[in-house]
Image (cartoon, rainbow, N blue to C red):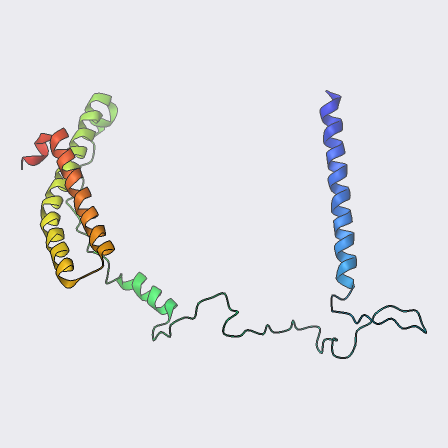
Length: 193
């Protein structure tokens, strides 16, 4: 029982000592100037290197401004813009993003009745109805989206877009068709209107 307490006490003492040593070292090193010193030693006084007039800072309250040339900046140059980013974001939050697809709100979702909430079997039936409604909605939307995507892919090929961009559209089309076919095979009732 005493061993964990002793171990804990030793750990606390060691950490406190390390913190004190680190603080003392940082405070002492912060007092010493970190400027480049001349390497000459004054033979008469025996004093070591000191700052020469070129190395001494003119204003120690202000950090020196970095000298940046066109090639040593890690950031890419920004394109000049007529629209401030903050203004653009505020406008998008207020009025929406014009590039975003429109959201079509379906009819209000059917809420579970108190009886369905109380009975696990009735609630399972409620969930099954909601899932079926979701699956039917996906299949219905896929039937509209698939021909549109096929037309877009044909148009992209005719315009000579990059193969990577065309492949991206083809992959999207393939996944939509695959999900539609999977839902139709697992739940044939989704095909009935």
